[in-house]
Image (cartoon, rainbow, N blue to C red):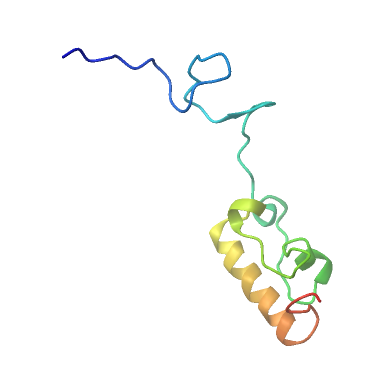
Length: 97
């Protein structure tokens, strides 16, 4: 019984059959790591700052995850609390009809 040696590289093969490189790449080049806006710019999270909070919720009213927005875990927790507090005070709607 003969064993078939797999080609080097990870992931599914490309269009030409050659394996893709092991790093994370998209069409434009390597994927850049997202940086937390609040850490970089020293922005304070406040439930009254509606323009800031609206950037982190969808059109349907759902809170975007930290993986999507690039916020760190500490600021994501503060952001969730601020959005929920603004909802309770009727500054932001829970859902959009």
